[in-house]
Length: 537
Image 1 (cartoon, rainbow, N blue to C red):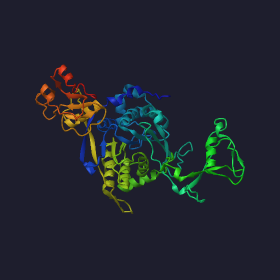
Image 2: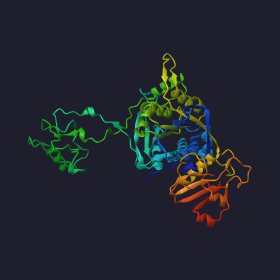
Image 3: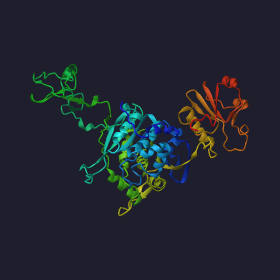
Image 4: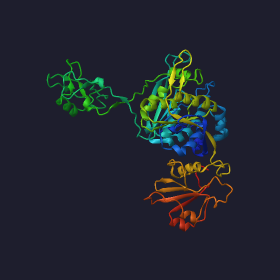
């Protein structure tokens, strides 16, 4: 399979694993609505934020939508759209090194996107799906990137969204770029779209057929005589003796034996003249699916609506070219249809994805949840959070409208990234609490999020491993044994028992161990020393 290479690739291929885990702190003043709704808005660099959230949400997200920089070279956007912002230059300098000075605009964009996409894949459920908005500037590079990370076999398709309602005459080529792409990949081949609702009005029963309502459908195929000779044969109407030849470039849709059966069952609609072609009676009772295929051409509002709605919420222009929330709601509803489905957007911008999720829940009484990440501190607090707060509680339209818009309900927590879990010496940072470290250790040991917020040294069970953590962050001055941070023979005997029927290995994380190796083996216990044997130090 063809692969994509660029300057700096080798430096970023495994960078997502080198990003330190950070703490996440909630800010009640910027949160709104029901704090227990399960929705998060995290302010911070999305690479660090994704790494921080991974121990809690890995393998749990049904739908990811991102609207990354399109790399147009436009320096005037709030997001510096050629990936040349001070933050990105600093990141590239640290990760890629001096080689970053020679990077083209496309190299920088690929270096930025690669580790973020690698992390995003780890969040998806096995039946999860990721959507990426993009335009012609990077569509070719993005597809190679997604093929490499998600697998070409998991490419579900490229949807087309018309972003403009009127042609743009400013392009020097004379072509108006009126559309964008929505690239769609599944985590595995298990992902399916819900599709459109079947239109039963196409079926009727004008001849009072005992089998019920039917519709006239095409009976030609899509193969010429050389490619599929078995689909090219004459068909004879047994009542009139008229013979009908197949279309020379298409053939029939079925082989001869199937055609004979359809004729015997009176499922063929014969033309009145010999110049026509037979069609098939498609009965409604034979249609098993309630849904139809989902068109690659999206019937969704264009950017004009996105701008209008945001301007009504704020009574002013606060963010350029926001996507319409109805557009995202339409796409999300195709895959995130379960009552507790989780949606993630790590390029949150003005918060359109969160708005779409809240709107969907209002429409069908759902309980979908969202996680949003926004890098810019000013945008996150004054635009993204404020938009969510207003659509949750309700707002008044500005201008002459002056019409109150009822709230959608729900709520979210506003969070910021804190210090890394481990300091520059590899020790556990002083700000780290027991639940913080427990969540990270359970994920590092098992690869899945901790089942519930840790309340004791027993963290949970996964695939034959019961995980324990001995750590008291509240008494840093006490000797390690007195603080309970050492696995002693007495402490080993007092470990909480795993669930009934468990016969696997107990994995105990602690700062030290005074139990002999023979006794550990006899008790089927594996000791791991913190912080040295904790992944991510």
